[in-house]
Amino acid sequence: MKNFVRFFSLVALVITLVFVGCQDQQTYSPQEPVVNQNVSPLQFFKASPATRIPDHYIVVFKEDVTKVADNANLMASQIGGKLKYVYQHTIKGFAVQVPEQAVKGLLNNPNVAYIEEDQVVNISVTQTNATWGIDRVDQRDLPLSTTYTYDYTGEGVDVYVIDTGIRLDHTEFEGRAYTGIDIITSGGTATDGNGHGTHVAGTIGGKTYGIAKKVRLYAVRVLDNSGSGTISGIISGVDWVTSHHTTNPAVANMSLGGSASTSLDDAVRRSIADGITYVVAAGNSYANAANYSPARVTEAITVGSTTSTDAFSSFSNYGSVVDILAPGSNITSAWYTSTTATNTISGTSMASPHVAGAAALYLQANPTASPATVQSAIINNATLNKITSVPSGTPNRLLYTLFSSTPTPPAAPTLSSPANGATGVSTSPTLVWNASSGATSYRLQVSTSSSFSTLTFDQSGITATSQAISGLANSTTYYWRVNASNSAGTSAWSSVWSFTTAASSQTCTGTKYTGTLSGTGASQIQPNGTYYYSSVSGTHKGCLIGPSNADFDLYLQKWNGLTWANVASSTSSTSYENISYTGTSGYYRWRIYSYSGSGSYEFYLIKP
Image 1 (cartoon, rainbow, N blue to C red):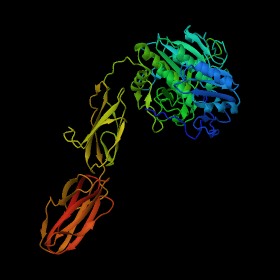
Image 2 (image 1 turned 90 degrees about the vertical axis):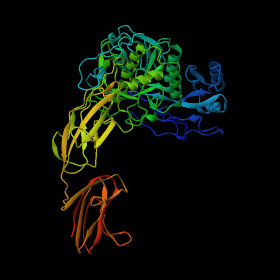
Image 3 (image 1 turned 45 degrees about the horizontal axis):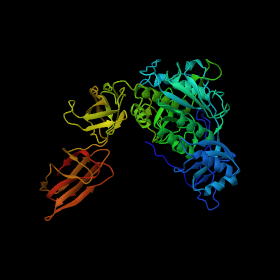
Image 4 (image 1 turned 180 degrees about the vertical axis):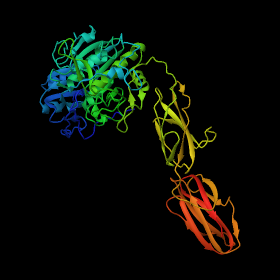
């Protein structure tokens, strides 16, 4: 599903941690790690000059360190630093403001695992006009139904929105939004002065725009009104969530991300281990999400974005680390400017809360489910292969929110191409059918018999709605049909269609013999596996028409008293071969040989 890679290489961390609600993100070249004082270069990493915060650092302890707060205070005091945050519930460590040369001295401390420069987080958004997201995720296929059906509401589930805060008095939240912690303003109420967090919360749990309409929403404000924050502040928010979540089932949404950060990844991973399901945005750089944090965290649910036409969003990050896709382009939700305001914006920031809401629905029905179980349930419940233009290696899974629906076998597919009764069809056609709602795979059968008593092609487990086949004979009528399957069973067969392949562009005359070669290196003797005797001198003519996707060769052999010797051959790169040989009387035979490929052939013979 995903490969978590700890980016402790000599290419240093580039953490342009950018709020993924926007489509325009900056990228920076990596900086080499500082290497001095005979300290391993794996322990200290500099950020990009464009995002680093001078003299601000995140110090991460080794796992066996105890009395974290005491050690943090002692170390900060020893180097003359100002202690900003202490982390005890995810990573162990602290954030400190101190001159660079002073903090480097901690690299010699046996309790320190690594140090990262702190960095700025920024956001921007794109405004458009549309609403459709929750309509899409309760149905397997387009067109949209203009309704949203749900079996659960997320009641009893706590969702932590790690973002710019939430407008708590917005009517969308019906009094279900609460202050969690305000990392930006000490003692603040985590009120949203930017809008992004309110929009995300509205998609998770708003009464109109939300997936889970009765969840409790907790504002964890880690970004300020301009959309700026720090990695150290985000980790502090994750640390607070980990220490304050109750026995209620819990979900955390992080519609933010940027270049790889080991400390942020570690914090999220350990919070998940404490029982909180994390849903994270893949990012908006149209790049491999494996290079971004926290998108690359294996245990989190990483979300890419789709459009209302079931296309992959042009901005969305991609790759095997993406677990699922969800609506993210032109999403309407609550906004911060008034108690009834709305806005329409785009990004994987908008896709992630759809999935966070779905996780809350599942947890209401399964309140003891672990984060791994929730992740598997969402992935396994997804609608497959509906999204177009999905980059290679990215799972084509679209969020589906009706977890309680009892699966039923899919309907029989309808055939599409070639048209029923078509003629002049290639001997290597691609057969196309229409998708069946709820289908996870298809079976295709092709036969020269309308009763399918013998099969030319039979393949199951096809996940696409088309299949290329090859090696068909020229001037032959074929019949084909398809059925569909899912976990509940298999549909009836589709209607049976037929097509007739084109005549061969090569023509032969003479007595016709037929045969089939099973594969490369196979051969047969003609006529009919034996030889013939020519009592006079004259011309022997042989003509071979084989499969268009194979290379069959033709040999004329004569008995010399000891063995069969080749007296003529035709060995082009195709399966059309022609020999005309004038010889004396004697015993002759023809050998058809597969240089490559398999299939049926026609052989035509004219004797002297």
